[in-house]
Image 1 (spheres, one colour):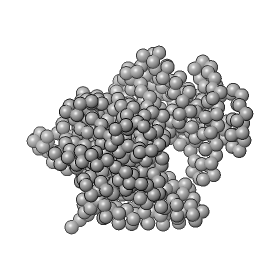
Image 2 (tube, one colour):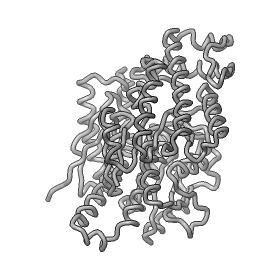
Image 3 (spheres, helix red, strand yellow):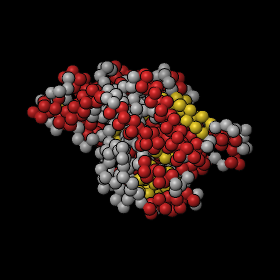
Image 4 (spheres, one colour):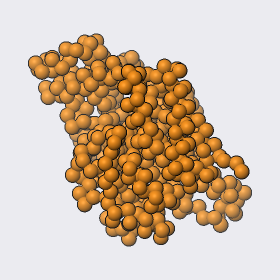
Length: 502
């Protein structure tokens, strides 16, 4: 099986993760690094996963600004329709419902973005509808005027234009699904708040999907960065006609009692929506499950990973996880207590109780939707490879041993990278580094070159030291070669590994 994949942008989460999942699953993935390669790839692949925001605007950041006109955006979508009509292969596309705030690459821009977000919420309270398109020209209420008084008027107008254009593009993407039965469309909700223009747009799109009876080929759910991974898994499962059954185990009797920070739904609903997007089944009976999804849940209304967390965990839940792993029962672990990083004290304790390399997958990256999507995608493709490929059948062909070795190596490397980034970097190192730079009045969002290089070297060494302390099962085989901040800010990090030689 071969799948063409057009990534959202060039971040590790968009490209590197996909490359690892391809190796883990034994599936050949052709990552399209140029838009010109999309049509040519369709002649020799079995399916395609396409980020429409990359195809139309150039990427995620570009989708949040109004450089691409309405006409140019519609023309790009029309061009894609011609390609899809000419090449009848399964296509799994996604088009993002824009978040409240524009992108920010400095502290000053972040403040303005917060103002825009507040203004969007206020404007949504005066929301009007005109031919199922957001009316962005209604007169603002007095409070709204106060909110945007400190934000440049041209920035606000650009933001509104981008929202209206993107909403119209999402409408046209739904039309594309209605006209081409080979297309499955996901509309991920980027950092969805409980109020705002994005909620109004979501309702319009949901009503349209329901009215045209496209629920089986169009789905709206929270998230963004993980969507390409979910659709990749869906493409594999539909091609192989396999439906995995997943049983979630939460470390709380009421996993929905606290609010997620960047999603507008309950945690159990988020799990259900992502499994549906993948094409898996949420199993209610543990005896029927193909694997168990262990979820460390928020124990207060979810916040970003704090500098000094409190240790809270369930002995019974950890005992159950230990028992399953000891019995060889497949298990995945999602650490969702905090957003943007692991619960570090919990992970330190857990490192003494279980062997992380025995897990199907792990993540705590970014939002709950992002982390959960990574965990499920990795787990299902790992399970898929182990289920579909027996050692005997592999060694009956010349590539058997090579496939086993590469899949196992990729699985362990990706597990190690998730533990390094999601736990050791995002929870142990980044909060302290952020605090230090801010106390020195240095930017964490637009690093000057000298500071960037120094931080990269310091972080690499700290990762090596912490890995030796907590992850010896991995660090004895692999080590951190170097670290880079590809977007010149502390949040996005690329970690390169090298094998240890003896």
